[in-house]
Length: 369
Image 1: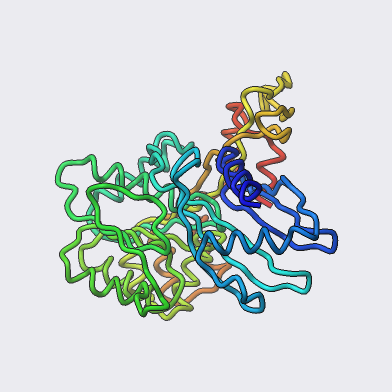
Image 2 (image 1 turned 45 degrees about the vertical axis):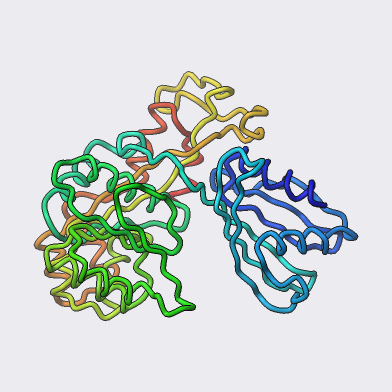
């Protein structure tokens, strides 16, 4: 049993999985790994071993093995025998067929990608650098879960660290996803009262120039982040939102005054991740508008894709958008104001990667709807 669980964890890391699902069913336990945003079945555990597999995972994470009737959360560290050092979060929940367990893998010392290597357009990169080097304000990166928002912000932080007079940089996250020397990193712990808002209020008394807030998810955090952006701090954060108009509307609904949003928000980046064609097996199509198609080989688990690449669009605080915000316009009015200066079209930017042979048009449709 120990070897089975260890092999599953090791294989997930080798395959660059971000999550590993242990899903109970009538005929046993289905194990699926999320690789490049897609779930792939990797193992099936027979019914008589299911309880032992779940118990082993609980032991590794220090959870209560005898409690199968409540959700539990924990963490474990993989060092010995692991291809790379990993911090792993584990979550269990009871279902009608048994306990469901999900593991999230966080590489402890991953290489932070340079801004240029993310795949974002030159225009977007110039906007990020220009805004970040222009003093205070809020830079917001939006998108669904797993769209690379935190990676983009850390790449921007890495760029800031390399500049003269970078100053004091502090991150507040849940959890800390990248460990970086030279900056202060704080992990919130709501169960102990260490919430985003409480940490941020304390950090602001410690003379920071730049704050990276893992996510704006509640009204109190939104208020503190907005206030900090108005007092000379550069605030970098993420939000689960489909677009710039939706993100601005959520800030309004959280109770942030419109005048603080119009004065504090400097740039909104809408981002998605496309699956990258496997360079070992992609096949030419002869079409200059889409020169390669997915094929499939052992290296990419016969999916045709290996790795991901970012696409994005930006929105700035224009006079028209400021006017709509101040009169509390709805989502449609806000989106129209964003597009008035030029459509913030993710699909159009994604087509650039199709023409360059990095992805396919079906994958563009997957992320653009």
